[in-house]
Length: 180
Image (cartoon, rainbow, N blue to C red; front, top):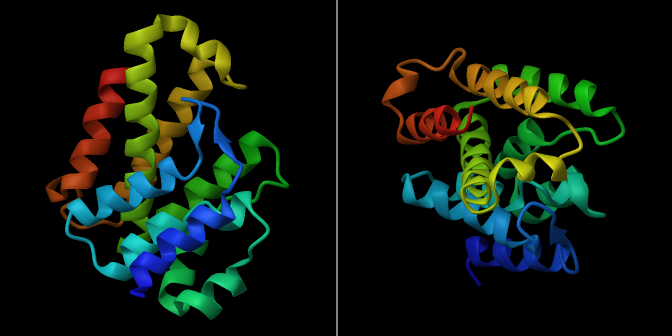
C-alpha cells in the first residue's frame, strides 16, 4: 500500500466516530479535503500526508511519535507545526498556534493554508445557506473568529518570500475577505 493511501486509511480509522460540528459530517471529510487541496496545489507527498494527518494528534489518541514511527520524521515535523495544544484555553491555544506558524516551514505554512481554506469555505457555504445565525454555533463571537483567521493569515505570509504568488495563500486571502 502506498504511504499516501495508508495515511488516508490511518486518519479514517483514527477519526472514526468523530463528527464535524460546523457541517455535521464525518470528521475525516475535513482532513481528506485538506489533503486534496494540497495535492491539487502540487505539494509533495509528505506535505499531502501531513495535511491528511494534521488533526490526528489534536483530536485522537495518537501522538507525534506515532506519526513519526509510521510516516517518518518529515511528516511528523509538519504535523507538529500545525498541531494545537488543546490543554490551553481557546485564546492561548490560538496565540500559540499563530506563533508556531509564523516560524513554520514552507510545508507547514501550506498545510495551515489548506486547513484554513477548508474551514473558511465551509463557513462561507454555511453563511450563504443559514445567514448570520451560523455564528451562534461557534463558542467565540465573530470578532474573535475574525481576529484568529486574520492573524493566522499574517503568520502564514510572514517570512514567506513572494507569499502572494502561491495559489493557496491567494485562495486563503480571497475566502477570508469574502467572510470578514
